Length: 489
Image (cartoon, rainbow, N blue to C red; front, side, top):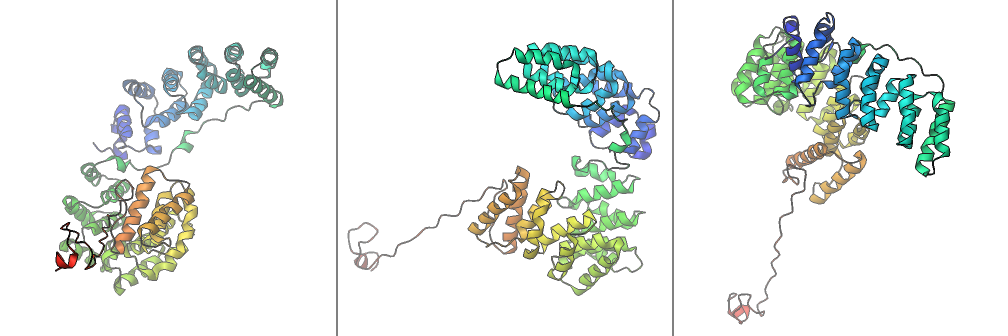
């Protein structure tokens, strides 16, 4: 079931959390207002939700930590500490911030955990500076794990521990433990007072508006979003329906949206997505009709331009429209996308200029444009993007398409090795993306692919070398006669 923000008030907290866990409801200010503006009973419903999940890891756990930190209700502590006990490293930073909000109220549960597992010492120390119960427990732990306790006392930061650490150091011979104890003493002697924790503002940690996790849905579920009253939801669903290609079965619904949606931007995205079905004559003619309709909103026409740019990008009409829409700021991004689909070399200066654009969306289109137009001169400018969290894969694909290399097995292998060095290695998904791009590059040159679906090089076909038999040589058939008197006669 699709839940859009207009339905939040009439939807229970439990249903909203279930939908958020599935990616249907985005985690943004709109959801937070529903949860926090009238907090009565909200925590009970959240705790029931997490309790029903048992030991199963939730996708929205980090966001729930933030909600608990905002509500500051100690009833959440058993679940928080229980979650940490199962996987202490998953939310270490978030947990410390949350536990510090509760201070003394969190100590009993943490001491209970610490008595069973010394790994709890870090959370006990970091979350409760100045608590004498914590100091006593950590000092007592010196006799069981001198190194670990010394580190935790450093985190705790109370100089009152110095005499006990000195006593332990005097009685310790093991070098590693002595090193930890000495480091703890230095730290405690030099450290100043611990500043109080800053007040937590949950609104800083969430966007005002976000989109559902469209990647999590099947096409049939995405089609449901096309009826959402949220224009951004309809646009996002359209975008995902085109990955990798709009299915023919859904083309009629997208066409209906392109011709009737009240928002020009949504209609433009629908026309753009319909470019996937260009081979259908009826769709093709409607795309061109909308593109040529001077009365249609520019953003809608620009969407139709993106659809037409791939098959018709070499036509003067399309190239003129690309330039016109690029010159208008409101449609520049769509025009850049049309350039990418067109693959037209005449737009190379535009692509290269936009690698330095202030708009990250334009930069991403320019990265793809370097690959689509196979701009060897732009390949070196892609290398810095290998360090980008958001643009790394796009830059790797574009570099594979554009960097100078011989279109041979050896040339592609050398390019792959060079890229791996420049990128500091590949993750599995990156390896597949790069080898797919190299295969596409070979396909454009009418050559056979070199890599399989896993990114492994396909073995070269065996080459059978036939040796020519001389007329006076023994016949290869094994008869014992000379070739000229046998098979060569």
